Image (cartoon, rainbow, N blue to C red; front, side, top):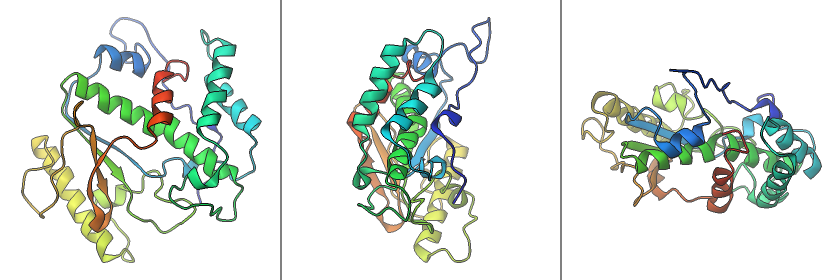
Length: 257
């Protein structure tokens, strides 16, 4: 497994520069809300278990996780009582129940790790990857920017990591190991054609190369993703963990997003 990091090590936010012609004049959530972003077509997606590679493999209590949330977001202008209340609600939305943690779909399996590992994985994955990706896709749709979203779920070799961060990269570049299954190799060929098509035409559906499912554009009235998983590749609604991710998005400013 990769070395784990604490939540406050994964802030991944730039230093704001509010000067004239600055690169990053405000929080992403505020820029998205007002349409102040590059209106260029894009592909954006996440993997099913984005947080596993960064989650702590040491036991963590709810108080530990709350302290991490507060440490990562204690910034000027953020009221302490507000941050504490939001942190408490986040922990309610992400309970210490392995059956709903990440790697998702693995029930109560703990892989020899503390129960908090799956909870921490889910928290990191949604705060750092899933919620920002959904917010970006929704903002693009509102302002008429063409985008295509994916959710990569093809099974991987390390069960405790699930479908971890960056697992899709070898598929896009055709660099799967020789031990990869035929199904995964075929998925890689399809993904390469999607990405090549988009690079050439700004549309992954040029009908050239390998026959592949239509990848719908992400729209406000049809917010869908292409689930990339071997022979199960299909279109899904972008609504998994709706309550949790909507809460994170509503409180993006407090969470420095």
